[in-house]
Image (tube, rainbow, N blue to C red; front, side, top):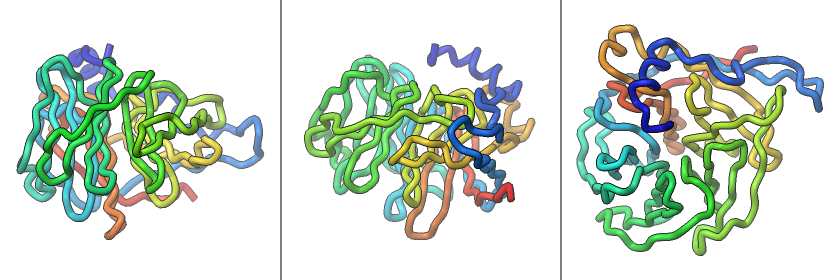
Amino acid sequence: MRVAIIVLGLLALLGAVCACSCSESPAPTTSSITPVYSYNVVNTYPHDRSAFTQGLVFEEGVLYEGTGLNGRSTLRRVELETGEVLQIHELPAQFFGEGVTVYGNDIIQLTWQPHVGFVYDRDSFELLQEFNYSTQGWGITHDGERLIMSDGTATLYFLDPETFEEIGRVGVYDNDGYVNRLNELEYVQGEIYVNVWQTNCIARIDPQTGQVVGWIELKGLLTPEDRGELVDVLNGIAYDAENARLFVTGKLWPKLFEIELISAG
């Protein structure tokens, strides 16, 4: 399903509608309305069109990217301003690379179906160890104490960063019920930002309750000219905590965007 790039590209070209519609319908458990944020583009940077982006991290001035597809999966260090790949590690062909996060001096990368993750030295990209998990691997981030992982369902898993054992989980829900297809993750100022796969939406999630406390609607980021060649869905969130910059991109996209959010209110 996830490797059907042509089908997904057509969906992206048609402007896939968010499964949740980034809706503001009343929640069954609260009288509040979930805010929906739009965006301004602050800066636009080149992005490798061949990169099937699965994970994106900005840490201490460095952009790291994990890409997918069997035989094409990589871990990369990328120069933000030019999009140039400065360092690359290629995964064995049997692995479909997924989300990445930087934890201390390590980079952690998931794979899709084999239940195998990799830990690399942050500077050299040397493989330090492998670990296992019981679900599919989609997105990964951390809150400084726990790794946070998605598997394409409505569940987020919390893992011990030393043993990789599950230490908790939470179901993600919005006003209409559980939100499935949770994909790439980023921890931003106490919230978990999540790409909802095959949509133009990012969910802002309370990690304690799993409630979606805001939606970010990113429809229209790519122009028709950008879509002149095959592109796939929105995927990839990175946050520069030092300078409070938010970056987003997508699979096979020619551009990476720095955006600022505009409150619906």
